[in-house]
Image 1 (cartoon, one colour):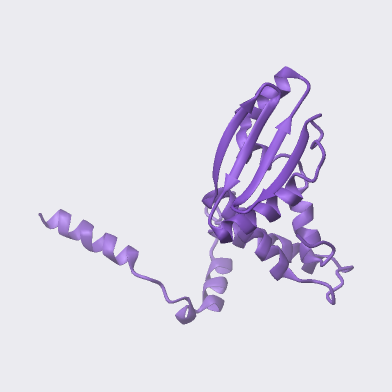
Image 2: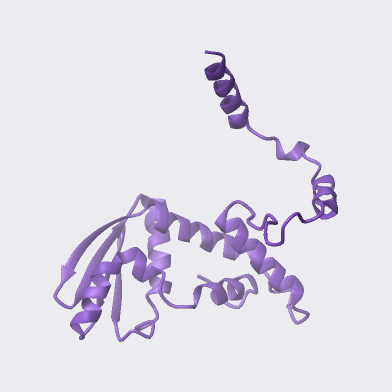
Length: 189
């Protein structure tokens, strides 16, 4: 019984909210840099959340580039795009209709999510074929968008259906460069 009480008390302590305003971040940084590395490669590297990491990565790129035009930088534009990415990836719903030459995806959500869906599909499916020979067409709808992805090659058509909307959405190597371009003020989403 004592073990269960100790376990419950430990879990309750872990769930207590942390007041980040009361933390001494300077002391943590000094302690972390003063500590010897026990084993190479075991240093903490993840900032704890993907959007935070993407923002931090982009800020480091901007700070490290002497040609950054700070009069145009707008990191909040990138943050808004990352919110859209999260809304679509985690909060949208997709109904898939398999076609003989690919698939049609009806992507829907609440009004806020629908707006994210429309922005994401408009930009991410603007690439005519992502180097695959696929045709991509997106049509907005009040609750999101309809995305149709097709290919003449039956093997490619099967690949489209297998990847589904979320898999196709991630294709192409344009995500990271366009995140930096957004933050630089060179493109809007």
